[in-house]
Image (cartoon, rainbow, N blue to C red; front, side, top):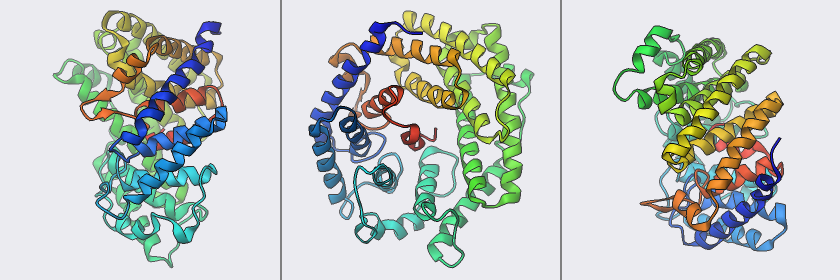
Length: 394
């Protein structure tokens, strides 16, 4: 399925990423999940479990202590990507996976819990707001399974979840089926890529919330309706994307990496809400589209350089790996291998790695940066489960 040099180069890349994280994480001024230390600790603990090197374990412990020390001072804002709720997600993840032990009576987030719940953002269909919701809900529901009507904090969180469901229902993001002629017209408008990406991201996040609410038994009459609408809306967009991919539409040729990511998010959304599973015909159509998009992506990367799209491509690979956890399709596994082969070949030096994950805010050692890449590679090698993906709503 893949050649030996490609697989042989994965461990050296993991080692190179680990060295860069090891050197830079302690100097990072960001304690958050997506861009900072909280994202790095998950990778470092998993890395120690993989290779047995206690240096990574010791650094992860030091970083956890550093993060904890600022929780009660002028620390990060209450946000998911780089603030308290993302740090809280990290602590939950680490305790569930037995990397750290936090007795309830000394939980550093316990004292902040009420303020976090009270100050959680208003229901918006965007990552920060929904990340807050999932974190505060998980604190209540972990081990309980449902909200208690006898607990004020439970009722406050349940009320916020209901507000999100109501917002999605009233926003009609899931109820308006796209028509092919309208879809094609939209591709000719200014900012077509940004507008379509934004629309599909809202569908992706809305489905995640509707599915979460359905699984917790909240607002069942509305969530059941939203789940049914989710199946229709995701399939209607997939059909439109399949049609433009089949004819190599200019929009697809110019935006193959973006269209790949959209297709992955839509298919994963459909997979989440389809109780009876996806039919073999639906899977085949998805594989045909992803295969063609990969071919166009290879041409695109040769012409423009894949480094421009590296973060989008990593996100797509993570989603494809999760889809294949369900599909078990050899053809999809082959596509994942080919995508990783290109990625590994690109990141062939320490300089290339740091350049690809640096911005004006410095080196990103978090889950949307180097540590996310490292965790993806460990997941590919089947030494790390897909559980960490939930922080990215995957």
